[in-house]
Amino acid sequence: MVYFRNIFHWLLNSKPSTNSDWQAITVCVVAAATFWFLYNMNLEHVTDLSYKVVFQDEQTRALPDSNAFVQFKVTGTGWNLLREQLKDQERIIYYKINRKQNTKFVLANNLRKTLNQELTDGLKIGEIVQDTFSINFEQIISKRIPVLLNTASIQLKENVRITSDINVEPSIVLITGSLKRINPIDSIVIDIAQFNVSKDFDRRFSVANFLDGKIETVPKEVRVSFQVDEFLTKIVSVPIEKSNFSESSSFTLTQETTEVIFVCKAQEEEQINLGDFRVVADFYKIDLQDTTLTLSLERAPEGVREAKINNKVVQLAYKEP
Image (cartoon, rainbow, N blue to C red):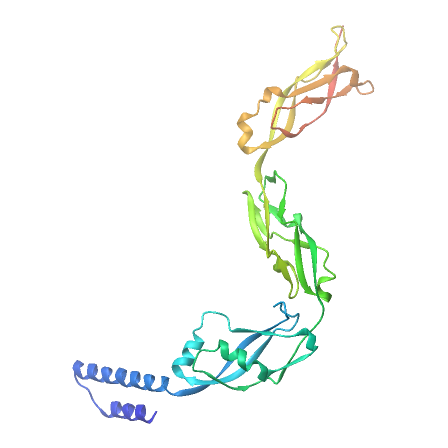
């Protein structure tokens, strides 16, 4: 620092007058800064590091509620510390516990060997902040449970409907964890949480996202898929076909057509033969009290869904003899 202070005072007292003077000063400052940086990177420094610790049993399964962080001081050159800070992977160590020892604590110093294996070469571990770590040896169990889909979470775009089975694959998963976490779980409910679905749906979901706490699952993902189509609501005029009206009957229909409402796939609209609709007025269904009868839809074209007559009741008119 004294070296840089002297340079700073020299710059204040000097009065460069040309561009070449300023260029020379800039080169000197950059060279001095580079020298100072390289010099300090070769010196030893002390810094604090933190590693995640996962305690495992003999089957290398993480013990429930036993994850912790170990904080410690390390000593090393600036270059080694920089390499440690630039590591791509997560700072984590795995420490295996023998359940037969029935211990509930692990001394922090016992982690030194494992930490040394993970640290960048040339770094030395100093003081470890924690003294001990508590270990939870609660019984670990596994259970197979069904995977269900919350159909209420499927938000379709207007006029779009599901036209296939909703597939959840696999429909059963194996979960593993502590007894207190696994026992209450009877099923896993998947929420899609996607709005305005308008195309065939095929997506994978992480099972862990729908579970609370540290629980392992096999497999880790489930696949949800179904097909959709856009539907249209149409209204068409259909001629009324008379049935059981005798030529000598004193009654006649007051209308020759009626409206039929139906739903069809948008892509099949042009293929529907509207002439296949058949609406029948059966004289035997006459209501003599008000001289009306109820129409019936006897046939609908292929591809039509939810077809119904808009107004089923028609008025009959009395025909003068």
